[in-house]
Image (cartoon, rainbow, N blue to C red; front, side, top):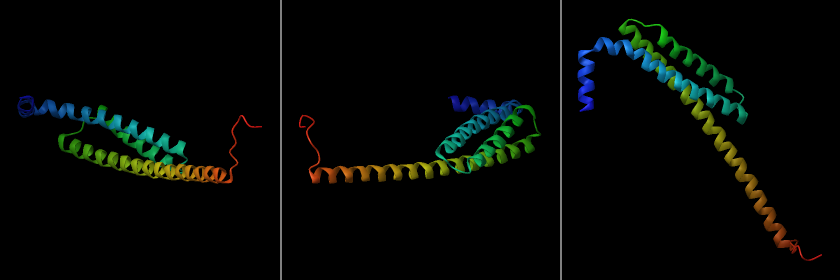
Length: 137
């Protein structure tokens, strides 16, 4: 029922939908660029040398999202602009997710290596019989 009502609203009030569309997409794009900004900060903390590139992409995407708030375009130009901004936003998200995935896997391998080394050392100590009860002198 809601989809039917919304469909009728879009058909009957297409002018209103076109007026609201840039604002809706602008909100979504600005919100997503803030999430990408957080990814860039996380990558900086992980030591990724090109974290600034993702920060730059988030800033450009956010600026285009804000532009959608304040600069209404003609219908066709607006739809093309929204499409271009969505493509840019998707590219920024893809790059940030791929970089974060790479660094998380790298950190996991490093932690596994440390764990394996500690486990090997504990087994060697136990095999040598160097573990003593604390009550013994």
